[in-house]
Length: 333
Ligand SMILES: NC(=O)c1ccc[n+]([C@@H]2O[C@H](COP(=O)([O-])OP(=O)(O)OC[C@H]3O[C@@H](n4cnc5c(N)ncnc54)[C@H](OP(=O)(O)O)[C@@H]3O)[C@@H](O)[C@H]2O)c1
Image (cartoon, rainbow, N blue to C red; front, side):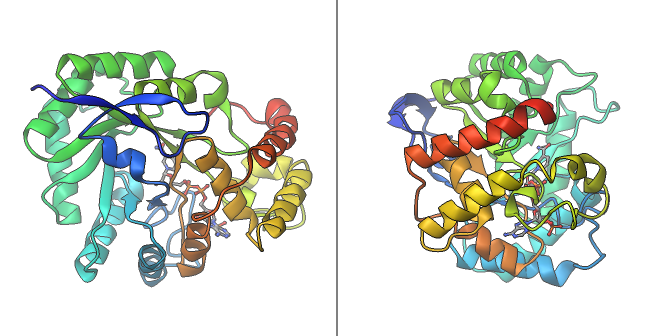
């Protein structure tokens, strides 16, 4: 398999870095923001079925599309397949083209490369489509080597089940190993999906963000709203419900100065919300945020992060304000 590589200017990166991007993965660099679909069935963190359900997430999907979002990220793990099945329903109800990514979960009983095309076939059946645009390894496998995972992804491309392949939660060294293993098969590593927000900036320090730009790997940012904390709606008096309480309650007082700054900046940009400022910051850093949304209001508001930009000076001020919180309190995911 021989693939053509050419130089493009990444539309989202500041500083004029030239990146090498294959023609197959180029579309990912043109997407500014997507929609995360973990909420569409997950009970453990998001309490699907309590306070929101299928009709709400259907409206989230429709509102996102109506407001210019054309890319949805799901995984076989989310809601045990329910997120993929719901996405399939919504796609059939819509006449708009949507780019889709899903993920392979490396259960310990999946230990051969053949497990990947088999798992992807299952995802395709649940979504009801013939191929996805991006297939990702959700986490490094406890039993499979990076080489055999990449060989499995290569089989998925050869079978026509996916256009491009990526990884998620891969550290710097493992990401480079994945990049090289795929390159030996004539394929470019399209993406690394990692935790990245104003409150989780490990990828800036461990070199992943810079290396992704250098190698033309799209860095996809999950939890860009830090699971709702950066919307400004949670305070020490009003902590998030469920499992998020224990992780985030201790920092809610500390993040209030940052929230105040974001609120002010949003006002300076004609009434943008904290969530929109948080997502815009991720875009300005050269990553692709995929905020999750439980309903139409959230999806519509998040889409309002597009069409404008924070200034370099504002990004620097947000960096500075978040630094004081991130350093002492948050650890790498
Ligand atoms: N690869 C991985 O390991 C991995 C891990 C996690 C997530 N992901 C992906 O990344 C996506 C995004 O991450 P995430 O969903 O965990 O976190 P997130 O996008 O940071 O936060 C989403 C949550 O924030 C709240 N919210 C969203 N928009 C809002 C708005 N405009 N106003 C007020 N509240 C709002 C909602 O929760 P409440 O209303 O309940 O507060 C929503 O469920 C996921 O859907 C999934 O596709 C991948």
